[in-house]
Length: 312
Image (cartoon, rainbow, N blue to C red; front, side, top):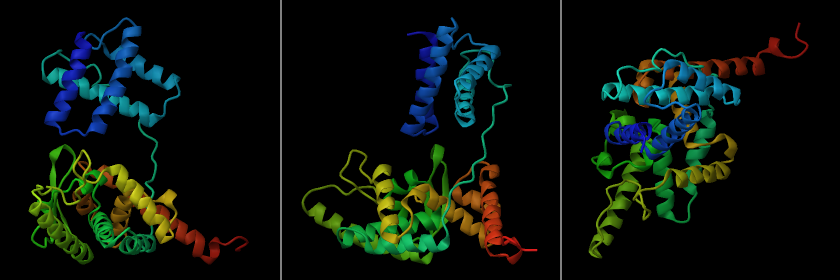
Protein backbone atom coordinates (compact mmCIF):
# COMPACT_ATOMS: atom_id res chain seq x y z
CA UNK A 1 0.00 0.00 0.00
CA UNK A 2 1.39 3.41 -1.02
CA UNK A 3 1.54 6.39 1.37
CA UNK A 4 -1.28 7.97 -0.64
CA UNK A 5 -3.69 5.06 -0.22
CA UNK A 6 -2.67 4.75 3.45
CA UNK A 7 -3.57 8.42 3.92
CA UNK A 8 -6.91 7.92 2.21
CA UNK A 9 -7.80 4.99 4.46
CA UNK A 10 -6.74 6.87 7.60
CA UNK A 11 -8.65 9.98 6.51
CA UNK A 12 -11.86 8.02 5.87
CA UNK A 13 -11.55 6.24 9.22
CA UNK A 14 -11.08 9.60 10.98
CA UNK A 15 -14.12 11.07 9.22
CA UNK A 16 -16.25 8.13 10.34
CA UNK A 17 -14.95 7.96 13.92
CA UNK A 18 -14.36 11.61 14.79
CA UNK A 19 -16.72 13.55 12.55
CA UNK A 20 -19.60 11.07 12.49
CA UNK A 21 -19.67 11.11 8.67
CA UNK A 22 -22.47 9.06 7.12
CA UNK A 23 -21.85 6.13 4.79
CA UNK A 24 -22.93 8.24 1.81
CA UNK A 25 -20.50 11.02 2.76
CA UNK A 26 -17.65 8.52 3.10
CA UNK A 27 -18.47 7.00 -0.29
CA UNK A 28 -18.45 10.48 -1.86
CA UNK A 29 -15.05 11.26 -0.29
CA UNK A 30 -13.71 7.90 -1.51
CA UNK A 31 -14.90 8.53 -5.08
CA UNK A 32 -13.61 12.10 -5.31
CA UNK A 33 -10.26 11.43 -3.68
CA UNK A 34 -9.88 8.18 -5.62
CA UNK A 35 -10.21 10.14 -8.86
CA UNK A 36 -7.61 12.66 -7.65
CA UNK A 37 -5.29 9.82 -6.62
CA UNK A 38 -5.65 8.13 -10.04
CA UNK A 39 -4.95 11.38 -11.90
CA UNK A 40 -1.81 11.98 -9.82
CA UNK A 41 -0.54 8.47 -10.52
CA UNK A 42 -0.98 8.96 -14.27
CA UNK A 43 0.97 12.21 -13.96
CA UNK A 44 3.75 10.41 -12.09
CA UNK A 45 2.90 12.18 -8.84
CA UNK A 46 1.64 11.07 -5.42
CA UNK A 47 -0.79 12.39 -2.84
CA UNK A 48 2.03 12.57 -0.31
CA UNK A 49 4.19 14.70 -2.60
CA UNK A 50 1.58 16.73 -4.50
CA UNK A 51 2.10 20.48 -4.76
CA UNK A 52 -0.31 23.40 -5.13
CA UNK A 53 0.37 23.33 -8.89
CA UNK A 54 -0.65 19.66 -8.99
CA UNK A 55 -3.97 20.40 -7.30
CA UNK A 56 -4.62 23.35 -9.63
CA UNK A 57 -3.75 21.23 -12.69
CA UNK A 58 -6.13 18.53 -11.49
CA UNK A 59 -8.96 21.09 -11.25
CA UNK A 60 -8.14 22.30 -14.79
CA UNK A 61 -8.34 18.65 -15.90
CA UNK A 62 -11.78 18.33 -14.23
CA UNK A 63 -13.01 21.48 -15.98
CA UNK A 64 -11.73 20.18 -19.33
CA UNK A 65 -13.78 17.05 -18.75
CA UNK A 66 -16.87 19.24 -18.57
CA UNK A 67 -17.61 18.58 -14.90
CA UNK A 68 -20.11 20.95 -13.30
CA UNK A 69 -18.95 23.74 -10.99
CA UNK A 70 -20.64 22.01 -8.07
CA UNK A 71 -18.72 18.77 -8.75
CA UNK A 72 -15.39 20.60 -9.03
CA UNK A 73 -16.11 22.55 -5.85
CA UNK A 74 -16.95 19.31 -4.02
CA UNK A 75 -13.74 17.64 -5.21
CA UNK A 76 -11.62 20.58 -4.11
CA UNK A 77 -13.35 20.52 -0.73
CA UNK A 78 -12.51 16.81 -0.33
CA UNK A 79 -8.87 17.48 -1.28
CA UNK A 80 -8.66 20.34 1.23
CA UNK A 81 -10.10 18.12 3.95
CA UNK A 82 -7.60 15.36 3.16
CA UNK A 83 -4.60 17.69 3.33
CA UNK A 84 -5.87 19.43 6.45
CA UNK A 85 -6.08 15.99 8.06
CA UNK A 86 -2.54 15.19 6.86
CA UNK A 87 -1.22 18.51 8.18
CA UNK A 88 -2.91 18.16 11.57
CA UNK A 89 -1.62 14.58 11.91
CA UNK A 90 1.86 15.77 10.86
CA UNK A 91 1.95 13.55 7.79
CA UNK A 92 3.19 16.56 5.86
CA UNK A 93 4.22 20.10 6.77
CA UNK A 94 1.80 22.02 4.59
CA UNK A 95 -1.62 21.96 2.97
CA UNK A 96 -1.11 22.44 -0.79
CA UNK A 97 -4.82 23.11 -1.36
CA UNK A 98 -5.38 25.77 1.30
CA UNK A 99 -4.74 28.80 -0.94
CA UNK A 100 -6.65 27.54 -3.97
CA UNK A 101 -9.84 29.42 -4.73
CA UNK A 102 -12.63 27.10 -5.71
CA UNK A 103 -14.81 27.45 -8.82
CA UNK A 104 -17.83 28.35 -6.70
CA UNK A 105 -21.26 26.91 -7.20
CA UNK A 106 -24.07 27.94 -9.50
CA UNK A 107 -26.72 29.23 -7.16
CA UNK A 108 -29.84 27.14 -7.44
CA UNK A 109 -32.87 28.11 -5.45
CA UNK A 110 -34.22 25.12 -3.54
CA UNK A 111 -37.57 23.74 -4.62
CA UNK A 112 -40.29 24.31 -2.09
CA UNK A 113 -44.04 23.82 -1.67
CA UNK A 114 -46.93 26.12 -0.92
CA UNK A 115 -48.71 25.90 2.41
CA UNK A 116 -51.78 24.50 0.62
CA UNK A 117 -49.67 21.73 -0.93
CA UNK A 118 -48.19 20.83 2.45
CA UNK A 119 -51.71 20.69 3.90
CA UNK A 120 -52.69 18.21 1.17
CA UNK A 121 -49.66 16.03 1.94
CA UNK A 122 -50.43 16.03 5.66
CA UNK A 123 -54.06 15.14 4.95
CA UNK A 124 -52.97 12.33 2.62
CA UNK A 125 -50.74 10.92 5.37
CA UNK A 126 -53.78 10.62 7.68
CA UNK A 127 -55.70 8.56 5.12
CA UNK A 128 -53.02 6.68 3.14
CA UNK A 129 -51.73 3.32 4.34
CA UNK A 130 -52.49 -0.40 4.38
CA UNK A 131 -53.89 -0.26 7.90
CA UNK A 132 -54.45 2.03 10.91
CA UNK A 133 -50.89 1.52 12.15
CA UNK A 134 -49.40 2.60 8.82
CA UNK A 135 -51.60 5.70 8.83
CA UNK A 136 -50.49 6.62 12.36
CA UNK A 137 -46.85 6.21 11.36
CA UNK A 138 -47.26 8.18 8.12
CA UNK A 139 -49.00 11.01 9.97
CA UNK A 140 -46.28 11.14 12.63
CA UNK A 141 -43.50 11.12 10.02
CA UNK A 142 -44.99 13.96 8.00
CA UNK A 143 -46.03 16.10 10.96
CA UNK A 144 -42.58 15.82 12.53
CA UNK A 145 -40.83 16.55 9.24
CA UNK A 146 -42.82 19.70 8.54
CA UNK A 147 -42.83 20.87 12.18
CA UNK A 148 -39.06 20.59 12.60
CA UNK A 149 -37.42 20.79 9.16
CA UNK A 150 -35.33 17.74 10.02
CA UNK A 151 -33.06 16.09 7.48
CA UNK A 152 -34.52 12.76 6.40
CA UNK A 153 -31.67 10.78 8.03
CA UNK A 154 -32.31 12.60 11.31
CA UNK A 155 -36.01 11.77 11.09
CA UNK A 156 -35.88 8.06 10.26
CA UNK A 157 -33.15 7.37 12.84
CA UNK A 158 -34.79 9.26 15.74
CA UNK A 159 -34.38 7.33 19.01
CA UNK A 160 -37.67 6.65 20.76
CA UNK A 161 -36.17 8.09 23.97
CA UNK A 162 -36.07 11.55 22.35
CA UNK A 163 -39.84 11.53 21.98
CA UNK A 164 -40.89 10.54 25.50
CA UNK A 165 -42.85 12.71 27.93
CA UNK A 166 -45.12 14.67 25.56
CA UNK A 167 -42.21 16.88 24.55
CA UNK A 168 -42.61 20.52 23.56
CA UNK A 169 -39.04 20.33 22.28
CA UNK A 170 -37.39 17.52 20.36
CA UNK A 171 -33.67 16.78 20.70
CA UNK A 172 -32.17 16.11 17.26
CA UNK A 173 -28.69 14.75 16.60
CA UNK A 174 -27.48 16.25 13.33
CA UNK A 175 -24.38 16.22 11.15
CA UNK A 176 -21.14 15.52 12.98
CA UNK A 177 -23.06 14.46 16.08
CA UNK A 178 -24.14 18.05 16.81
CA UNK A 179 -27.35 18.27 18.83
CA UNK A 180 -30.07 20.90 18.61
CA UNK A 181 -33.47 21.46 20.21
CA UNK A 182 -36.45 22.07 17.95
CA UNK A 183 -39.98 22.98 19.17
CA UNK A 184 -42.93 20.82 18.13
CA UNK A 185 -46.22 22.18 16.82
CA UNK A 186 -49.44 21.03 18.54
CA UNK A 187 -50.44 18.78 15.57
CA UNK A 188 -46.98 17.18 15.62
CA UNK A 189 -47.25 16.54 19.37
CA UNK A 190 -50.66 14.90 18.94
CA UNK A 191 -49.41 12.70 16.07
CA UNK A 192 -46.32 11.76 18.08
CA UNK A 193 -48.36 10.85 21.19
CA UNK A 194 -50.71 8.64 19.16
CA UNK A 195 -47.81 6.88 17.42
CA UNK A 196 -46.00 6.32 20.75
CA UNK A 197 -49.13 4.75 22.24
CA UNK A 198 -49.28 2.33 19.32
CA UNK A 199 -45.53 1.61 19.59
CA UNK A 200 -45.81 0.86 23.31
CA UNK A 201 -48.69 -1.56 22.71
CA UNK A 202 -46.67 -3.32 20.03
CA UNK A 203 -43.54 -3.39 22.23
CA UNK A 204 -45.45 -5.06 25.07
CA UNK A 205 -46.73 -7.73 22.70
CA UNK A 206 -43.21 -8.39 21.38
CA UNK A 207 -41.73 -8.53 24.88
CA UNK A 208 -44.30 -11.17 25.81
CA UNK A 209 -42.77 -13.24 23.01
CA UNK A 210 -39.22 -12.55 24.23
CA UNK A 211 -38.38 -10.02 21.52
CA UNK A 212 -36.30 -7.00 22.62
CA UNK A 213 -37.71 -3.50 22.14
CA UNK A 214 -36.31 -1.33 19.35
CA UNK A 215 -34.46 1.86 20.32
CA UNK A 216 -35.89 3.69 17.29
CA UNK A 217 -39.10 5.67 16.97
CA UNK A 218 -39.67 4.33 13.45
CA UNK A 219 -38.46 0.77 13.94
CA UNK A 220 -38.01 -1.66 11.09
CA UNK A 221 -37.02 -5.30 10.73
CA UNK A 222 -34.31 -4.32 8.22
CA UNK A 223 -30.54 -4.25 8.74
CA UNK A 224 -30.46 -0.68 10.05
CA UNK A 225 -33.22 -1.35 12.57
CA UNK A 226 -35.21 1.69 11.47
CA UNK A 227 -37.11 2.96 8.44
CA UNK A 228 -34.65 3.62 5.60
CA UNK A 229 -34.27 6.88 3.72
CA UNK A 230 -35.14 5.08 0.48
CA UNK A 231 -38.40 3.70 1.88
CA UNK A 232 -39.38 7.14 3.19
CA UNK A 233 -38.52 8.69 -0.18
CA UNK A 234 -40.91 6.20 -1.85
CA UNK A 235 -43.55 6.84 0.81
CA UNK A 236 -43.54 10.61 0.34
CA UNK A 237 -44.01 10.11 -3.43
CA UNK A 238 -47.03 7.90 -2.67
CA UNK A 239 -48.44 10.61 -0.41
CA UNK A 240 -47.93 13.22 -3.12
CA UNK A 241 -49.99 11.16 -5.57
CA UNK A 242 -52.68 10.55 -2.93
CA UNK A 243 -52.77 14.27 -2.07
CA UNK A 244 -52.91 15.53 -5.64
CA UNK A 245 -49.47 17.15 -5.51
CA UNK A 246 -47.00 16.59 -8.36
CA UNK A 247 -44.63 13.79 -7.19
CA UNK A 248 -41.83 15.40 -9.21
CA UNK A 249 -41.94 18.38 -6.83
CA UNK A 250 -42.02 16.40 -3.58
CA UNK A 251 -39.03 14.93 -1.77
CA UNK A 252 -38.16 14.79 1.94
CA UNK A 253 -35.88 17.78 1.36
CA UNK A 254 -38.62 19.92 -0.20
CA UNK A 255 -40.50 19.58 3.11
CA UNK A 256 -37.39 20.88 4.88
CA UNK A 257 -37.29 23.80 2.44
CA UNK A 258 -41.00 24.43 2.95
CA UNK A 259 -40.49 24.50 6.72
CA UNK A 260 -37.83 27.22 6.39
CA UNK A 261 -39.56 29.24 3.67
CA UNK A 262 -42.92 29.29 5.44
CA UNK A 263 -41.31 30.33 8.74
CA UNK A 264 -39.53 33.18 6.98
CA UNK A 265 -42.73 34.23 5.22
CA UNK A 266 -44.46 34.48 8.60
CA UNK A 267 -41.76 36.70 10.08
CA UNK A 268 -39.32 34.29 11.73
CA UNK A 269 -35.77 35.53 12.32
CA UNK A 270 -33.13 34.16 9.94
CA UNK A 271 -30.79 33.28 12.83
CA UNK A 272 -33.57 31.32 14.52
CA UNK A 273 -34.20 29.37 11.30
CA UNK A 274 -30.45 28.69 11.04
CA UNK A 275 -30.52 27.15 14.53
CA UNK A 276 -33.63 25.09 13.81
CA UNK A 277 -32.18 23.71 10.58
CA UNK A 278 -28.80 22.97 12.14
CA UNK A 279 -26.86 25.05 9.59
CA UNK A 280 -23.28 25.77 10.67
CA UNK A 281 -23.23 29.02 8.64
CA UNK A 282 -26.07 31.54 8.31
CA UNK A 283 -25.03 32.03 4.67
CA UNK A 284 -26.53 28.60 3.97
CA UNK A 285 -29.82 29.72 5.50
CA UNK A 286 -29.88 33.00 3.55
CA UNK A 287 -30.84 31.09 0.39
CA UNK A 288 -34.40 31.04 1.74
CA UNK A 289 -34.61 34.83 1.56
CA UNK A 290 -34.00 34.46 -2.19
CA UNK A 291 -36.69 31.77 -2.43
CA UNK A 292 -39.16 34.12 -0.75
CA UNK A 293 -38.17 37.00 -3.04
CA UNK A 294 -38.72 34.84 -6.13
CA UNK A 295 -42.15 33.73 -4.89
CA UNK A 296 -43.16 37.34 -4.18
CA UNK A 297 -42.03 38.39 -7.66
CA UNK A 298 -44.07 35.57 -9.18
CA UNK A 299 -47.15 36.63 -7.22
CA UNK A 300 -46.79 40.23 -8.44
CA UNK A 301 -46.30 39.14 -12.06
CA UNK A 302 -49.32 36.86 -11.85
CA UNK A 303 -51.77 39.16 -10.04
CA UNK A 304 -50.73 42.81 -10.50
CA UNK A 305 -52.79 44.53 -13.22
CA UNK A 306 -49.77 46.39 -14.63
CA UNK A 307 -47.97 43.09 -15.14
CA UNK A 308 -50.66 41.87 -17.56
CA UNK A 309 -49.88 41.76 -21.26
CA UNK A 310 -50.95 44.91 -23.01
CA UNK A 311 -51.10 47.02 -19.83
CA UNK A 312 -50.29 50.65 -20.54
